[in-house]
Image (tube, rainbow, N blue to C red; front, top):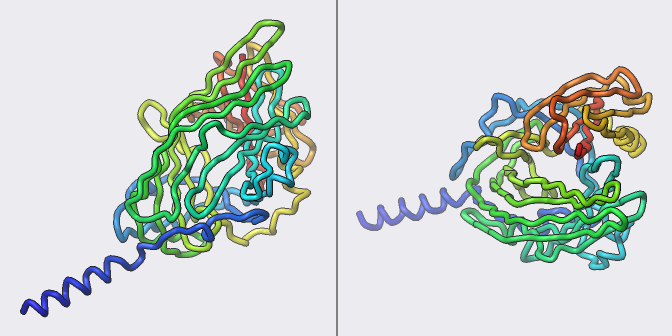
Length: 348
């Protein structure tokens, strides 16, 4: 009888271990990787539930346009002088506008080795001059290998000096935990996975010398990323990033590993999709300028806390959007069919 019970216990332990994968360095991006992603919305799906040997069925996720994540070697960007380490790669993020000034071509630089995956630095262009800084304290996303039940925490800080304007800096802390494992199904396929929940809290701040007066803008950071990681996928199978608003999670950026159900986006089309501007209308709101190719695109404007404040379809090359109490930070997301691009603006 004891032998029989021992066999049952042994079999149960083996069964429970199935699917508890481990994410290694080779499962994450390397320099010059290109990964297609599909932008989506997550209305009416349960993305918060998790557990052991859990099955996430997201097979009905929508296709809101495809784009490409390019993991550029730091030496292939304009910020190469600050990031000579060959382990670094850059991933482009949204532009920022401060009053009449713009920070563009913003890259976050990541470092991945056999023991960690995290953000090592940042690069921005101000008046077409490339500026960069290595983090004083690295923003480690998680340790490697990534395993079920793992929990990582760390503090981070950075500062980029902007000549004649001021500085762009940030600090905070991040806690990442593996809070589930099992299988995930999206329109891309079904995979064994680990689910991570990564929470960041802190503040980004910009000090600008406008008309001879130093003005500081505080950008609170209180966000959560839910991500499902699989073997050999290079990026999350599904990624849901959002902010905490009045104690609730508001999704802002959501994508899954891309399908090929539409024509692959060419580099030229990607450049066109990002060729639009958001400028301030002091005391009134903002102005959106687009080329002919982006007419009839949809634009959603969010406050930094994730609240949708305006939604419109672009009918003219210049569109003015009037906002109540416009001072603050706004995120503008344009859906132009096969591409979704993001701009950030700060209205004084």
